Image (cartoon, rainbow, N blue to C red; front, side, top):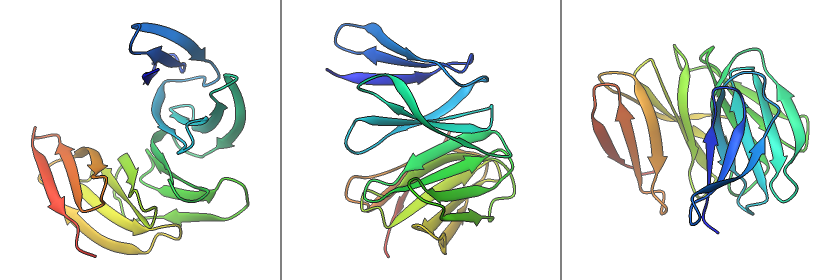
Length: 185
């Protein structure tokens, strides 16, 4: 089954069967608009962030909430590390928090000057990127967040992605431009 998840303004997360073009499940729990999702590598858990300043983990087999993390700011972006138990969360407050899902370890990162609009882990899990309304693309080491590099674009960087081989980053900005970066580490 080809599955898609959509964030809803009422806080729900809709799960869709793309082959049959129908909604198969509605995950209810957030009290304000759902803003972002990421699925765990095993395909059994979904992480969701919301304007209600919470991140929730869902068991996709049973459709129930497993975990909730509370934050001091609205959640705009998140990513689950594909190789270890780290979750990175980008917030309206311009902070990025990286936390160990199964333990107390937590890192707070502060290089953005405005809200963190998107976040993506490299497929190797060794680093991740964040983009923001401040026109910046930041690359960070997993998990503690040492800065690897920073790029500035001409307007807000709305979204980002990383190629499967971790060699390229693509961004989309508010001035309707896509930028491709080659990663040389």
